[in-house]
Length: 541
Image: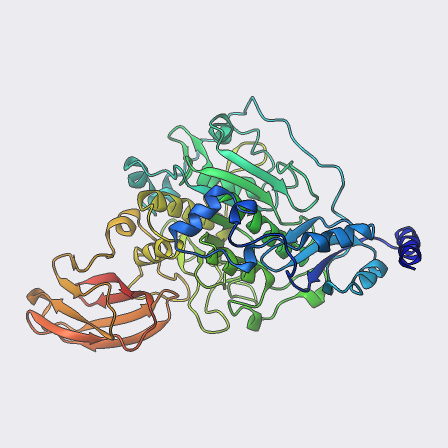
């Protein structure tokens, strides 16, 4: 009886493939019961570096780390269907089959549901590859990265020796055409800084194809050509993943991002930069999102970014280029909590008109920070140094900035690095939904916030104890600030206002500042007056 059932299925398979095109579907599996894997043996499915990241940040290996049950994959394969990629985090797999087979697969007891994520075929059985480059073209342009790096204090950061060494960064994009040809990336290949690469769109190893958007993005962080072109973290190690499908917009791209993020996690990647964004304009209109979906936990890619953060990865993403479009707001995954969504400014530090705005639909402030995204010096597909614009290019600058900062502060968690970057922004005392916390500065990020029991801010303000455990701290204000109105604000790590009040301190005043019954975590205490504009990172334990 079982044999007849499978024969009938294979006949259906043959007929379906002759009469209908293959589409791409996600299979959602029911559970992880009967898995041969155990969270007590993470070395069987995570790299040593990934395990070390969890230990370092005091993160547990959980059931979400366990691979999809192998028997479920074998069951699908036995039906003549290939599972191309799987997600441990969301317990699902990707298949490419005709619609009739998708309807048949959902009848399996271990498959909860099936969802269409893209029409048409893209996945191929031939694993594409590329020839490792040995010669590189030298650009003729004399454009430099001086302006964009100058806004972030990159020259001083590099002079101090922080260029991203020993940090592993993943770049997710739509293609890296020409990266393997340009002398701006020569050091990446010669120094073996490219550790992994994969094309999730068609299933292959040749990522140097499709388009050069990823090339330009990658150049702002990983590029190096003498004193002319200097990426923010050109000594970091990199992995390059193609997740964006050129010429169309489908939900599959969000799942490609998920698969890539899990691969990055398993490799032990520290930072993910993603210069993509999703809202409306999908090829299948029913896949479009509404503004209400930008709430930090609804869209597929935002949930994937949240999970990457939970695994100790620092996710940096472009805020979006919708500022002067009807949508206007940030795009997914920029709405995710505990990631860095990066907006764009011009070289004069004014906001770029296209830079997407906040808040998220649940009222959280976005973007988090900004960097130069107008008239950015980039590298194109033919290896030339060119110019481009968009939050796509401001985001990787901040990712490289974060890599250098994490190199300088190796014992920090991903959330602590984010808090330091926010607190170093030039608008940290009064963040908003255009600039976020503003332009970060490396010296301030490295030295300008507090983690110890107490700290003196420019000899003017003392806050203690810090960390604190109750519902209040003590603030001492120097006599030179007496008699001048001062706004004291408390914001959480997402920029949400907890409380704000205006005081007129007396000379050498010491007083209790009531934080209220806030949850343990990182907070930003801001002091703003005509005489001072300072921020303090406050830690509740």
